[in-house]
Length: 131
Image (cartoon, rainbow, N blue to C red):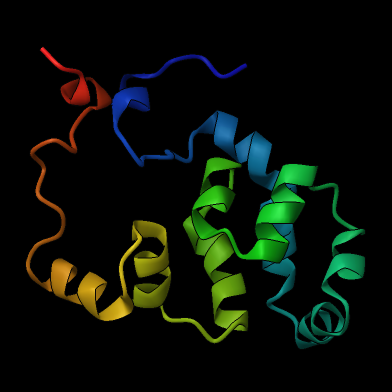
């Protein structure tokens, strides 16, 4: 079980700490394997079969196959590794950011150019509680 950290109350934050590193190791090693063209070819031919060689959890496997980008981060994925899968799919970082934020790519780009999300109401989950 994961212990609470100071940053556990920050919404949408999946800090790649030692817990996430251990949890996501198989998922991240799968993503790293996509650096080699022969592995990309094997994955393209049969994604599910290719994943069998990695001891990913059922949740991780589902997140990979469904391209649940935020789910992969929750399950220990590191954005630098999971983005290798996005590149495999021909996606841009802005597209993936939009998918994780629930907005279209252009809206995500505009939000980033404008300085990102406003911090009010996004600093801590406890801010969401009614006073």
